[in-house]
Length: 162
Image (cartoon, rainbow, N blue to C red; front, side, top):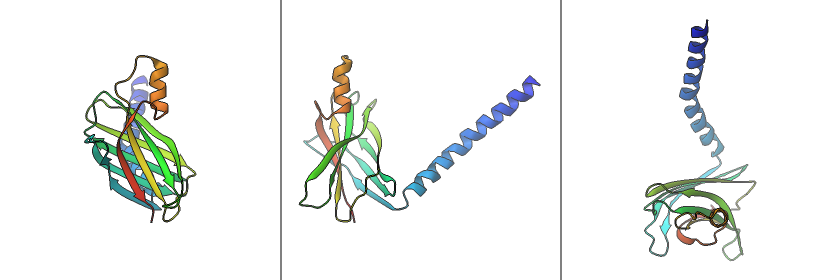
């Protein structure tokens, strides 16, 4: 009986691992059916950082994904979102979107700002900051991953909202 229960439990777990990735991909696609914008990252200050950025604008807000390359391995990075409702209007933000500790020369960021609605003609900018190697002082480390303080902008992605 115990062997049969283990076999059933194992089969159920395996089926979850096989089905979940497809369900997750479908859910991401349907969440982004309103507006999907793609652009490249522009290196700032001679950083050499490259990559791609995707912005999803939906009824529930804005989500972004960045795949950055040529980053400094072992450094802390943060991504900040800025919003301009009109080209001559004030910049709103920055708001923190994500942070990561790069383990190699590539890093991915994902973030969401629920409730943000982007007007036609507005612009959304994603800024990537390099904060250097992590500090062993937890207060300093927290200030680097929770604020742009102590960081240098190394790349940006600008989305002009149609």
